Amino acid sequence: MKLLKIPYSIIAVDKAKIEATKDTSHPSSRSRRFNTAHHTHAEISPVVPEKGSFEHSAPPWTPYGYANLQPLVVRSQNIAPLDCYIGTIPSYLWEDLLRVHAAWLATGKIHNSVLNDTVESWMASGAGKEIAKYLDGERKWFIRLDQMSPKDSPLSGNLPCTTMHDVVSKIGSSMRAHGCLQREKEDAERECRHVSIKLILNRWNEQIDAGQEFRVFVPPPAACGGDAFEISAISQYQWHSPFEARYGLSVEETLETVHAGAKKLLAEIEQFVKGETNDGSCIWELLVKHGLTFDLWLKGPDDARLIEINPFGALSGCGACLFNWVLDGRTLYGLDESVFALTLEEDGTEE
Image (cartoon, rainbow, N blue to C red; front, side, top):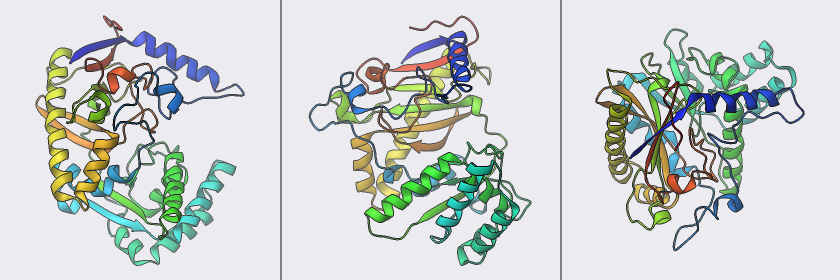
């Protein structure tokens, strides 16, 4: 795996361009060079040609649902059984949450009356009473929906929740969560079923350091003519900040450690999906068809922990971190040599 050191000055210029658009009539919150997502078929197909059984398509969310994979994450992070929970948000609350979101968009705040009504409605259900046992105002929780967390919420989305009010506030003010709710509604209508919204709770872990998180790219084997998963690329997760090696490791040693940990976790993902999930063979077939990315946390010099699994591909909503799904398409889809990308304050060389 080749080490790619990107000078942070390049990242800083890119960030400045994004900031400069915020006061224009066409503001943007995304980079056009790094961390791209949601490309078109026309953009990626000339770079990574379709062949055989491989074709470019937007991946379904089914194989990446966090609720199915939470036991593996819990095991990897050594989370105690009492420190995690998967609950449900009643289907009738879907419209209430959309009203909270609409109020947020219209006024930039969530009035107490709207917030209290939504919480009370949730608490009136059996599912709400069960979740409230965990959200007791004392214990801190990381929360997420099955597809995404509300970490983009301006209401401390990157901080833990302790109450039901916290949860509703974050979900109601998050564009990511709003997208999840809309997709679930569309899927339910297409599949002729009731809306099913899962809420996942994991005890907040103060030790997790986003500066030591990495995104691992695993393309569908058919994209490069293979028959088994191979890691094509790894990027630091916080692509917009200079990387600092920890645990007494050099940058080169970090590459070796993370790569080894990623290969071990990929094997564990395969074993878990095939042996411990409902419809494991079906889920595995979808992963093989569409590929996957996963995020890991380097907890120590020889200790990689799984954070989550996400979709793969230029047509997906998964951010490419220090890569660009189109410009770096041959690398990400496994057609060229595998790459480990970091951005550094100095001595960086973009190859």
